[in-house]
Image (tube, rainbow, N blue to C red; front, side, top):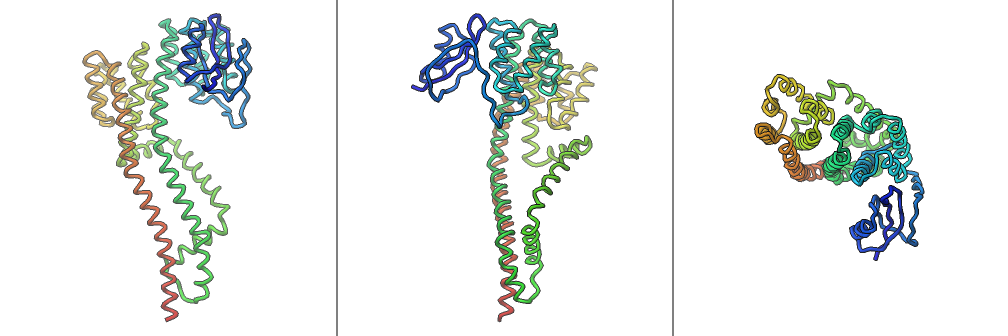
Length: 411
């Protein structure tokens, strides 16, 4: 049987680590719980004798370890903190344990700062609010609601679940773009090889022929010669272009125009709208479930949306909500959001089950996103392949035009 290393918390709040043989991780969890231990980390071990100790050495820092606290770190911390608090540990002791279990130095340093402020009399939400580069306004408000209701552990568990679902949605979109990205890279590499190494081989032959070449052939040879002599300038040029586009993308008017064009694009706009509405619905449902008012929740959720056009659409919705005109109807009147989502929200509002209906909207659009991704890839892949074929064919055809001109000269 495989050997697993573990870290667990005892009933007294101490950290215990060691190794156990078991068929799978679930068996390890059951055995640790039978021993009165609360499992925190379980991983398959490469070998070594089993041991257990109260002192846990901090993990070695990898050369490629992140230099800041990542989203995945925040998700893991939230889940672990919820587990410890629900197990009955005090907040101070739970933070102390998380510091000892920290997987990187930035995480440990951040937790030490939070622990020190909590010991100094600040609420956890206040300590997190001072670190907005790590914890969003949404996160801080959820924690504040949990503190006010006296159920911080339960609230953090719900928050971790919401973050996990949002992460799955984000990862599904990224995974779907891996193949197109590889295909584009191969296409660019193939064209560069043709232009830099293949096309210049014909240049000497064409020059010896002493006849004017067709314009397409001249263009391809000029591009190939430029890349051969100035290839080193292409990389910084591309980097500067990307930096320029990113900088322009931060200008509100430019970003709004870009997001508007994206929403109007076939397939792409539909996918963006569904991703945004799924994330919006789950986030707002989590806020409402933890006692945050609808008006405050909309203001928070608006900041989490990536598309500024969809986000700004809630400005008018918030105004009408303050005027007592409801939420679902003004949202539908904007015409920006999927009709199914707005109708489900309207039904939830009228029936007094808005929180539940928002979660259903999120589940529905999670599935819709998966379908939209498949549809998008079904169109994108042949388009990329056809585009590669056209570009390579154009290069080959331009060379053939020059060769045909030489043949006429010989005749």
